[in-house]
Length: 251
Image (cartoon, rainbow, N blue to C red; front, side):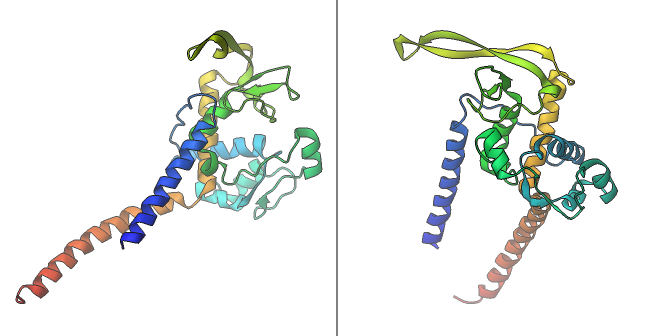
């Protein structure tokens, strides 16, 4: 039992360390993603954004379209709003672009997004999706605060509009002889179809969908987990009472 507990605590420590390393990969503090994985409306809007803007290049080969029934969509709604290229309701969410073309356009095959939220964390994704800015020095014309020199263009720029990043040179607090390039915010060049808060809300929905897609059964698992814990609590009391009654006459 002692060895089992040590292994369990070791595994939990490893998970925490991995999460810290992933969070440290960003160049600055991460914004907190809104918690909407329990909202069917948010998940449905996130699914629409994912299919319309992400699925053109990124696949989700662990997800089938018909699994979207779990977030309240009917087969007819899925067909009418989320299937555009002859896919069938039971097909996997694959992309039609070839690896060769992807490498030529982006330098590498865009990663599959089936479990991206579990890999990167929802706060990182929420920050990343909202911090693109125009940078003509890059091949795609775009850059990102959370992922500098990113190879992905800003596919949702029409929704957010075009922004530039403002940087200033300041003295390095650790070495007065050096200067550091410090980010001081964004400057809106042209407006998008959505207002800033509306765009942030949309990205919150998209991140919620990515989180749900990483484990579609998570809501059922959490609901079932509450009942399991309640059962174990009641069973523990009954077992303790039975044990006490059994041994009361034995000295």
